[in-house]
Length: 556
Image 1 (cartoon, rainbow, N blue to C red):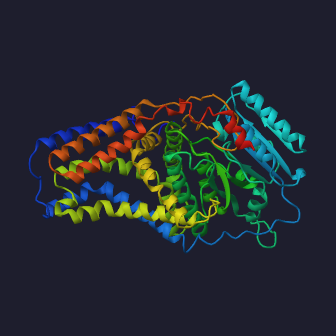
Image 2 (image 1 turned 90 degrees about the vertical axis):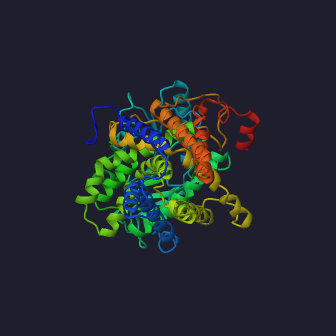
């Protein structure tokens, strides 16, 4: 299914056209001598305003993020208030969707079997779409061990993967009459008291059901945050997004999107909202917005932490981020019009929800701006033409302050995620994650812009690319097994172009004596290059083959 915006051409055609235009304008700009307009003139200000529209979009997103993080202290920092469970406990179905998860399947099935809940009110569904025989045998054996403990644990398999994860969840949903559906991806390890702590948020202080609460989302923890600079950077943005953003959204607006795992759904609400659909690559967010439009609330509980594995390789991380960013763009195609015109809610809440749904647009703004800014600098059509102070204040200060704010607050406030006491040394260690965080996000610009454009202009029903798991912690089996990750060639070309473009402008600025501009462009090129050269690192032995002694030590 094509987008209404689509041309009868490949989705990457506009990117290629924009890149060609940037190269042409660059050549003309470098061949010209002297500014096009007199800095400070009325015409110059008008041209500057028009050319800075992408940057204005960036600033608007920074303002939105600032409001969420500062607003957290007014609404969100206090614990989410739960009710109490009713005398007759509800029936719960724990669902574990997986696909060829040989390294982590056994671990999550065992963890589900350790959840505390009356056995006559609990069932476990292992939604195994695996295609290799070894993984299927491992899953069957793990499920059998859970059944030996007296729990109902069924393995559901489909003849095909129609609808991918959403299809598996929808088929499994129809096979249970449980009151609540609990979802865990295969790389998560829920604590034994998860159900006892999550289910009360669906009830008030008297044990009466809150019928308008459709979903309760838990905080993501980390099994391998200190494994590498890559995982440290990811742990920072997860802490920032969950602890700060989602806590504020839940407390202020009564809505957070489901993150696909570590959450509980009211089964009746899912039924009334139309069930799971594979309409986008973010089936979890798509279902969340359908519940929003149906009048339900969703809640986030930062005090309830479920540890999970962060992608340990750049290729795995890029595959994950491609799916998420592409899926959010698809979600905009599906529901943005309804949010803006068909959903009745106060204006302030509508504006925030639009910001929430459109968050992936900022990747496109940043990519366009980073291609445009060197040309504007060369043409003296930037604030730096008025003096160094204006350039620093206009371009460096907003994003620097935003990154520092998010890093400091996330490091200080994620106290439920980490066991270590937050003294000065621990705070400094967490805050040091800002360095790889900035490198990672800068290096992902071209990749994320491609994902957004593909989601906006490409086919709506796209292939669900799983994120490879390496069982970074928790006593994983030793294995040399490797899984394929598709590396799209347009993404490779886009990253190579972005790298070369920034490097060329960096050298040109240095030749012109614009040292700081040159170093800035070269720094951007270096960030892209650091990630670009690691395409395919998921095939390396690191993280997949570990000495048996290390695995046994983890198990002990």
